[in-house]
Length: 528
Image (cartoon, rainbow, N blue to C red):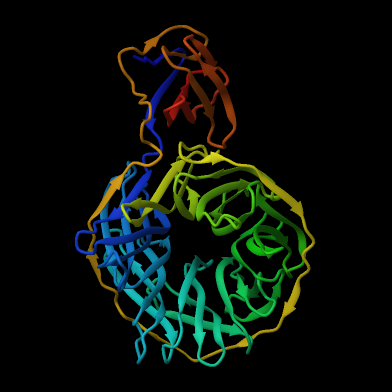
């Protein structure tokens, strides 16, 4: 029998569960036999409820057949309980952002919203309330529905409007960049589409500055892989530059000196790597780095990025062994503002993909994506969300090494023109309830830490003391910035961790053994 005692001195310590916004969420397959569920993005309200969006794909036969695609909307409380789950009749939700009137805007794509003959995907934008009620909807697409039109990113501007960007299929010239501005009521203020008369150009991500200027990043063919463009606040194209062949920009962030840091994928020696580059206001390169994981034959595929207030970057996606072809493994990593890797983590129990990463409103970071498990002869993905500290510590993710090198990327100026031939409409999407199940992930088989009668007040110079029996424990304490304050091994003896110099605030206590582990938040109230 193992005992864990906590004694308290001149600090008051309160334990609260950490990482409870953590688990796998899957839709009921009673009527559809098999389903794929995944999160693409999430947002929080003032009460720290999480609104996670993505897709749910289902089929009526394990042997294949018709696949039905729906958008996924899920409201989850701070403890990980599902408050509401809906499927929407447009196929996939790529992004969600809160609005100033306490609602949300979601973007993505759906088939047949502008159907005229052959129905294919159309770009879709909708405003939705916290209880899942659609307030308004807008759709943009090609006039004859001969290509896929998708919204990938949305950002607010300096006037409370919203910029939406992605791709629209041009009847004559293939996929082209598309960007539009809408107000809070969904009224279209302007639309722009641009590209060349050969190849493809599309927008994956955007950044809106305080003066209203817009940077859009994406990809293009014909030697325009990593593609950056600058637009005026009215959407007029100022310039476009490419930095590497066969790649794509997934995130762009303004720095203190008004430069722009880009997070991209590009192909190097037939392997995809993570590329970070910093450019000035006219697209000239200040510095650039390429990163890979220190794993054999490993390729990195970026899917989501986030920059915190200290200009640190969080990046997630998946890595892939190009020699053994063993599938997609989720990863997440953190760099500082000059591209130095602070830590990198990988999950290697099952396949999956990291699709979104952001700060939690009060505790650490939240990562979301797709987890793939095998059920009998069917590979069944589940929507997956994990809350952890800013140091990336989790029971599921293991530390991995990275390799980095400086590179010299030379920008090439691209000349693009305005395109047309798209249409718009205002269809209202429909929603229907979705039955989901939830299981713990990264919390199972964990040690439980709770307040109980064994806690005592003793005068031990403001120290935390742990006492154990029968098993060796590893104890680690970090602050909200991921700085390590303590790292000790407990083995049938008492250990003292001084808290005398700790400030009032939240700290993350990680305890692990050979078979079990847990991470919880502790609130320290200093009486100094």
